[in-house]
Length: 113
Image (tube, rainbow, N blue to C red; front, side):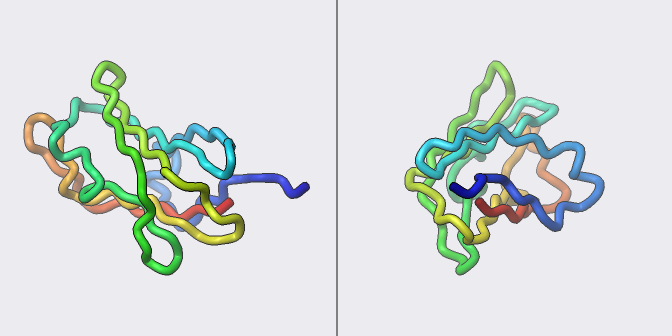
């Protein structure tokens, strides 16, 4: 049985220490938890502004939940990841704080099982 792991590549050095993931390997699924340092505008936390894609550019169906008390966004796939394929967690600059502040640049994290 091969080991399941998360391979994160090409993360800018400035973001490496900020990326924290919580893995739950249940039938090839795990949940990304993204913690922000300021409260978010819940209307901007959605599947248009934050999404997963595979290496072919196909959008993966997800459930996105904003945990207001912990200021954490959870992104979980609705179907298992395929082993050996690359995936991308995409966070666009359309995700905003309650005060309307946007990310300075989009975030794209490459990973695979």
